Image 1 (cartoon, each protein chain N blue to C red):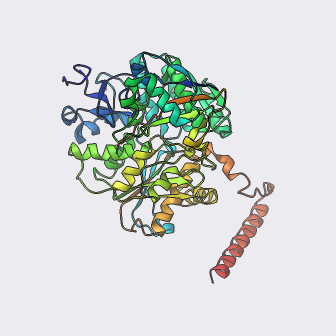
Image 2: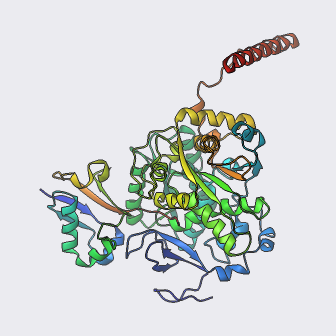
Image 3: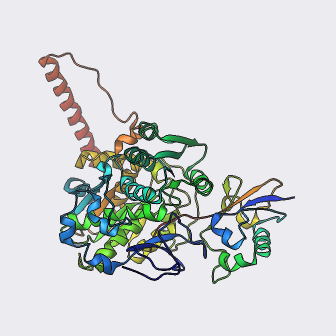
Length: 434
Length: 93
């Protein structure tokens, strides 16, 4: 396959293209157009993909995200070494009943491997390209989940790492980076400070920064969330998708995945509404959507949902466009609502998510309550990270009763007291309700 | 009064590989004018069809986004370091 571009002939089925002016750049570690300074993204020769990306070829692929390799930016000859993705899509009747929803599904990336967040998907694609470009050192700026994923994947691939995080990151996310032998750099500032420093570092050192010079490749990994949702629904698209937003990339890439599936004929074309979720303490994209604009005003983040705390979201413009262009909406919720939603999701569906998942769940509840999502519509809410990483938000939430002695009589007393306490709570609830 | 201005790699094709300048501009509009005066080839790339600075280009003063400091109204101080950094996004609409 040979394609003409401004740099000469291309011999691959994908290439970098400026999102705004359309200039093409072939295949290189670059994220910014040198003509209009706009972001680059990966474009594909979909004609070439038509024979390689079919329901049949996918079903014969591995039981992980690499089953969609033909629409990811890696060479045909690439042999995947990082089996992430293909997480459960589960129907959520008990959570749905709480919301008045009858057709609610959860895409559960709280159990994405190996580091329990959807970032394993993007890092898998980014590091495949880091190796292709010959980098021996990789890095990232991160609010935590990306740090964990880069550290783990780099260890498996034998790459050196420099990982930059805000200094106030949750202890579990710091430990879950260092355990892989990564070089962790704590930066005195918020994510936006860290990200800016990473941009300078990537220009100074010949390293592969997954969310700087490898960003166009990295972001493509998010498409696999969309591919999986469609395949797991029996090759059909949902009516609505609810997605947490930090930088705003994931929601745009799920849309891109759906569009590619439609264009290649794997699913029927149908309107899908995209809904975005943010914490009120960091809600620049939700604010833009509510103001019906794609102009993003930066904010100084202040929320327990640190993995979503990006005050100047680079993809905010595109996220806002996707949401408004599909008839969706964006909402933001308080820290108290986030914690309650974490507990509600765990108690109803057995899924323990981190604060970002609390944001998504609380926003989903509100979208039903406000009638923006109808009860019968097939709705998928995306849980992107695991609660074991942010247990600090539940400190003090549960009373620890004193231990009983190993005697049946003491256990029976415990049960009686427990039932009495539960009944008391129930009666109090009835009284409150009446 | 002078400020140090660090330009991103993406500009260098249009600045004869100059990465750093010293400017006596007193605020952001004057700085942009100064940069465009020194590097005329950069001007058409720096601004969109509407004549405005493209929205993916961010200016930071020391460690802060200039939009938090008053944006065009912020008066540069002696010794300020101004960083020009394009947003790094990977999205699509």
